Length: 432
Image (cartoon, rainbow, N blue to C red; front, side):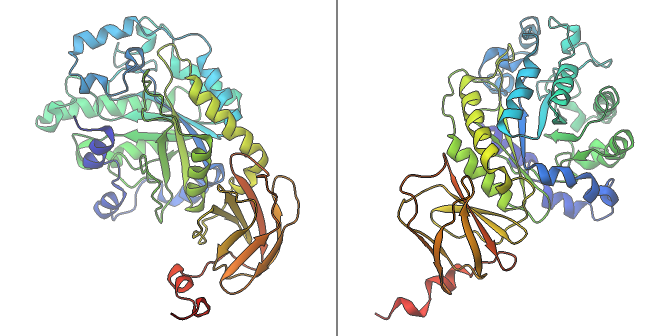
C-alpha cells in the first residue's frame, strides 16, 4: 500500500514551486502577508492534532482507505466516538507546557467526518453520538491558554459521494466544490478570529477545479488576518514540507509526527526522543522555518503518555533556552559536528547536542567573538579563535543542561561561516 508521505508527494503536498509557477499573478493576501505572519515567525513551534473516527480503531488515520473498509461499516464508528469532556483543555495545557505557541486541529480529515457543527451534513460530531461541537471546545481551550488557533481541513473527502467522481463529472465537481467552500465558510464564520487555515490533500482536482483563488478570496474576506498554507494548489503564505526539514526561501513549516503515526496507533511506540525534537526545532529555526509537531489522541481524546512525557521535557528545556529559538532569524552558520545553530541579530547560539566535556571546536566562524557564555547558567567560557577555528577549552565535564546545552556567543556582526570546502583545504593542515 502507498504510504501517506508518498501519496502526498505524488498528489501535491510539496507543491510550492509548482504552485508558484502556475500562479504568476498576484494572489489573495499578497499585500498583507508580512504583517499577518509576524507573530508566526516569532512563534516557531506549534502543536498539530490528528483526531477523528479513525482514532477509535487505533490503526492510524488512513485506516478507511488502507484497509478498504466499506463506508456504511466505517460510518458506525460515529456511534462509538464519544470523547471525554475537557480533553481539548488538556491538549492546550500540554501545548502551553511544551512551549508551543499555536495549535492546528483536524476539523475534517480525509474520512469526511466533521468535528464541527455543519449545516451541510449530518456526518459531524454534534449530530452523532458525541453530541458536542468539538471544534468549539478546542477553540475555547486554545484561547484560554493564550495560544493561536489553527484549523486543518482536508479538501479530499472519501465519504462524500462526489469526492471522487468530481474529477470526471462537471455537475459533481460543482456540487462538491460548493460543499467544500460552504464548510470553509462555516469554519471561518462561526468561531471568531482564526489564525491559521491548514489545507490538506487537494486530490483529485487542481487549483482551477477547486476554484482555489475564489476560495482564498473568501477566506481573507472572512478572516483578514489569517494565514493559509499551500495545499489548495496555490502558493499561500507558507510551504509545508512533511516528515522532513527542508528549508525554503519563502516562509515554511515542517510538520512531523512524534512517533511514526499521525492518527493514534496503539502499537506504535517508536517515539522520538526529547533530544531529537529539540534538534529538529533548532534545525527549523536555523532555516527560518517553523516546527509543527503532531500528537494523535485516542478515541476518547486522551493524549498518549509517550507524547506527554516528551513534550513536557521539551517544554522544560524551552523554559530555560527559549531565547535561542523564539523570534530567531535565518542563520547562515550551519557546519559543525557537535552542535546546531540559531541566531538573533549578532548573537549566535550553539545548541550542543554532543557535549564532549573537554573541548568544543566550531569551524570557520568569520566574525570576531566578543563573549561566550553558557545560556542556562550565565557562566563565561574560555575560548581561542583563529581564521579557521573557534576552540573552547576547560568546559564543564558534565553537560550543563539536558537534553541539549546552549552556548550564547556575542559577535561583532551578523554570524557568518567560511565555506566548508575552504575549511577542509586550509593550508596549515600541512603537506603530505
